[in-house]
Amino acid sequence: MAHLRQMDPDFPIERQLGIDTSPVVLVNVFTLDKADEQSFLQVWQDDAGFLKRQPGFVSTQLHRAIGDSPTYLNYAVWESTAQFRAAFTHPEFRSKISTYPSSAVASPHLFEKVAVSGICVA
Image 1 (cartoon, rainbow, N blue to C red):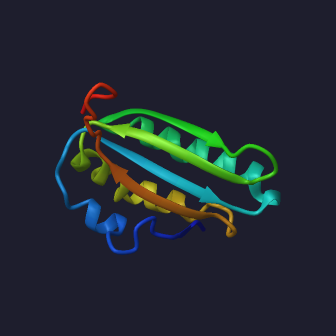
Image 2 (tube, one colour):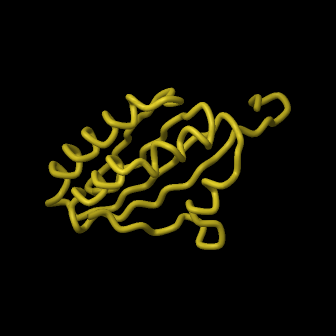
């Protein structure tokens, strides 16, 4: 089972789920034992396949740290917090979390775009 480590302990994912905004980007950093990488990838694929079929899902991308670090970063774009919350709290998704390797630690956090003049738009 994947363990949760809050990216911001003062504002955990459970509190973030209560804020209605759109769109949102989930950023999730996974750390795990190198020996569990193949198992992790199989479970993540199944997990992501479920989420991809949920209302409000826009896209996702998984990245692996360079070198020998068995650290992964996933980001997923959702139309709204409400739609992400429905998928994240769905019983089928919650049961999938239990199939992650025991060494996996997930650090999920929700973000929204920020406008910076001359650089990026919100």
